[in-house]
Amino acid sequence: MTEPEIRRSATPQELAEDAAAALVAALHRVQAEGRVPAVALTGGTIAGTIHECVAASPDAGRVDWSRVDVWFGDERFVPGGDADRNDDQARRSLLDHLPFDPARIHPMPTSDGDHQDLADAATAYGDELRSQGNGMFDVVMLGVGPDGHVASLFPGYPQIDVDDAVAIGVTDSPKPPPERISLTFSALNRSREVWFFVSGEGKAGAVARALTEGTDVHDVPAVGVHGGERTVWFLDEDAASRL
Image (cartoon, rainbow, N blue to C red; front, side, top):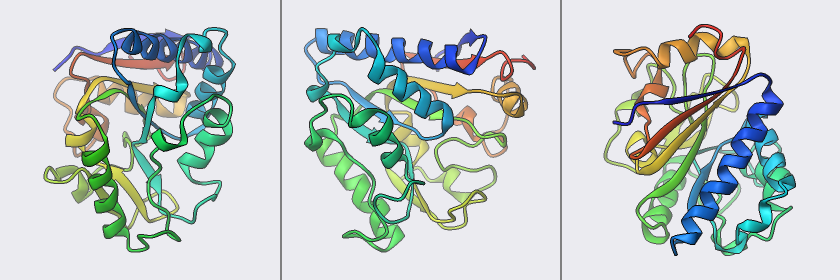
């Protein structure tokens, strides 16, 4: 397990700019190695700001965006185009602003799509990742909730202990909407780098618990995800205030 690296920024905007620059550099580096990078995106306010900073980056031209595979760590199981969906947010803030190849963007199923049963939808996404993925993410991007949840893996929920699936359904999320799809820990951990993005004093306690040795993953799921080569916590000063 890699020792977490902590990167502090004074404000959420500075955090987003730092993370955006890091992502552009990482994708450029992977392509320079002759590989097609695979990234798993997350949702949330700070993620949206990061996406906007990537789209506006003066270095964005260093990346061949048509050769980037885009996946998602979790999703709200609601109709396509719903503003609550992470993929809709990602399109508005990033994917529609750079020349991504639509065939390389892999949104999770919608509740009004081909797989309207939640369990079937989760299985279908797992099958898609197995068949079209390259076996390893280069970067998994994750937010962290005030309760320490990541993706849609919540404290005390049985999905935390699932290790024989790529993606699973969540039927009673403590945050609306109640039905979601999430990658499992085993899938999220198949990543060279895992990056957490946390902003705000309301999440400072979760950050402190997640970075305390011995914290139980059932209490703070964020401790269950780590990169094979690098784990980075991008924090603003408020989120880092209890470290």
